[in-house]
Structure formats: structure tokens, C-alpha cells
Image 1: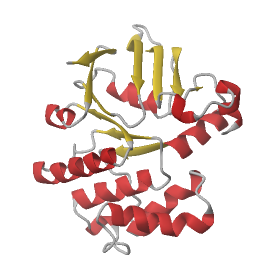
Image 2: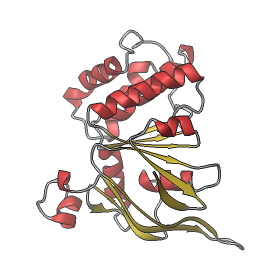
Image 3: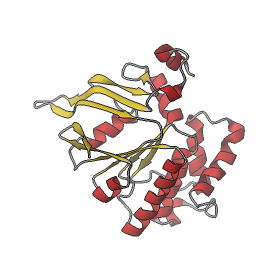
Image 4: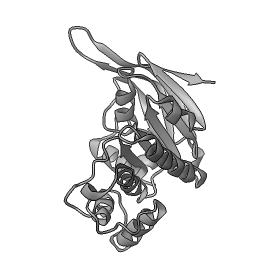
Length: 239
């Protein structure tokens, strides 16, 4: 446990808490007309769940992602990660939690074009706390897991969109995160390639990984075990 963990909940095991818990969280952006991007959002994501958050453009999806990923702070309320309150935590503590416990997959892949597939995945270990001696082995295992062990020395620019997203997924899971956050992960992919990426998410979920997929696509959302809708910054469960 980190010092932040111990301060939050003593010696209780991390597994005793939800991976993510939002408590009456709001995010308001100031202006002549303040923008209420999130309104009293409350949500629990249990360990091993596969949750989708679906909503149209402008509904608050991006704001929610930024807060879940500890890239932004709420205006009021709090986000607990493994039972650890994060809203008032220092930037150093938030960076440590983000690097060690959260994996990110984005619509635009965010791969370095002039570094090999293997290097792109290895770079993720520099800020995630993976011991130096384990880094290459973990990277090779992660790329094998997503079916790209034959592409180690390729540059991302010569890969297909589906292959680039698989590299991004390998990079996201290399540090064994507690939760994988995916932002429109199939937004740049065709239907067939999207299906392959979603099949991989299904496999990761079966292996016990907690997933939160944020999307506007009903077909992507339907693959999840549980669905939540966001509209005008408010969260509601989808039956």
C-alpha cells in the first residue's frame, strides 16, 4: 500500500473497496454562463466489472473521462480509487495512482510514430512503477496477448488501425492496471476491425480486468456487462 492508501483506509485490503466510486461529484466550468458538465454524479464500479458509459457529444463524457483518469479535479464531491479519496490529493499522489492503477486507450491511439511497436509499449513502464528487470518481459507478454508478437520492430505508421489500437491496449495493460479506461476505442476503426478490438476487451474482462468504456455507439455499449447513460452531465443506469 502507498502512504495515501494507508491514510485512507488503514490496513484493509484494496480488494475490499470498489475500483471506482463517485460521490455526488460535480464539475462546473466558469464563464459568463457557467457550464455544468457533471451534476451530482454518483457511481460505483466493482472490481472485475465491464461498464460502458454512453452519451452523445456534449453530454459530459469527456469531462467524466478526465476525472476518472485523474486528469482533472471535480468542483465538488469526490472520486475514490480503490477506496482512496483523490479530489484533494497532491499532484504527486494523483500521478502515482494514475501511473500504477489506470490504463488508458484512446480513439486516436497516441502512439509515437518514430518508435517501434515494442518501444511504444516499453515507454509505458517508465512511469508505472514496473521494475526495470521486468519491463521487456512484460512488454513482450502484453504484445503477445494482443496478437502482435510478430510486429515488434514495426513502426506504427505501417500498421493497420486495428493493429495500432492493439498496440495501445498492450501499452495500457502492461502495468497490470486496476481499471482500463477506453475513450471511443473503435471511433477510428471499421466495423470488422472494431469487432476484433471489442472481442479483445471481452477476453480481458474474462481474465478479471475492470473496464470502463466511454462511447456514443450503442453497439459498442451493448458489449458491456453493465451500462450507464450520461445526458446533460447526469448519470443514469440503463436497464
